[in-house]
Length: 173
Image (cartoon, rainbow, N blue to C red; front, side, top):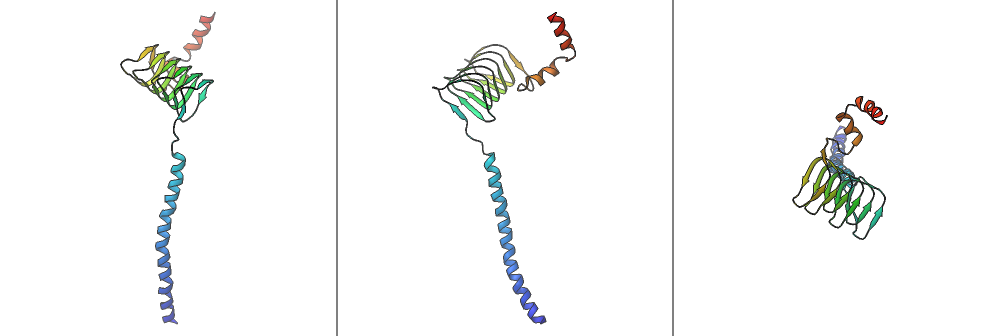
């Protein structure tokens, strides 16, 4: 019996050994599949393009990217906003990154704002970083803020909150 168990043990171990290499092979395959599944939702969709013949009246809000080639009468909020050369925006623009090639009439808020040589901006720009190319037309004021996307939070540290309410009623009387 002792000799049979020795024969059976190696025989039993051989399939286990064969199964063990299969298990490590299948184990990395599972993370590879889970990595693929994890990266699939993270894949960034392409920018939404509003073509040059499109005229929108109303506000636009997305966490993604927008490329505007047409006309928008309303506010826009996006992650990356690209204003094409033929585009006209009449309203407030708020985005992490703003690239302006066309015309904006209204306030621009962005962490990074870039006015190209074909840009035409009539309004204030509130930014963290800004770049203005030679040839860009800009009429308004420029203000740097650490958090330009949240106007309420940026204004409170800049002004004394206790002094502002006291001054407001005195001015209104």
